Length: 153
Image (cartoon, rainbow, N blue to C red):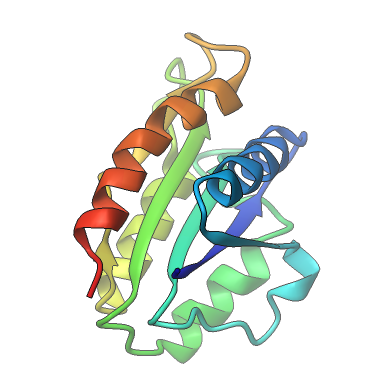
């Protein structure tokens, strides 16, 4: 079974809780899910033979949260070519702002620039519609699982 690395960027903890919830559910599906804490991301380049899920809230004017910013900047600067990497982005935001899910969009653009392939369309969870983003992420897992199953070598 393919490993799944999950990383998160959070301001108030919702993205972290959502990522922790996804790890439990993905493990229950039979995958080996590994949750990487922001302080563990220094030097981390996703393994192209594993899946990557980024769960990220947005802060300020569409900005990436401070806890995951160094990793984003590292990837942007070093620009590793990752053409075989399959990734998914789960964005948490508030659609009453013009910069709704701005951080998730930046991660999506970055991985596209690095040559990686989106396993699923970006999931954007709107705080004006749900107070429990982890429940929306759990619903999305059926889409993710179907895509992962279809992508087996």
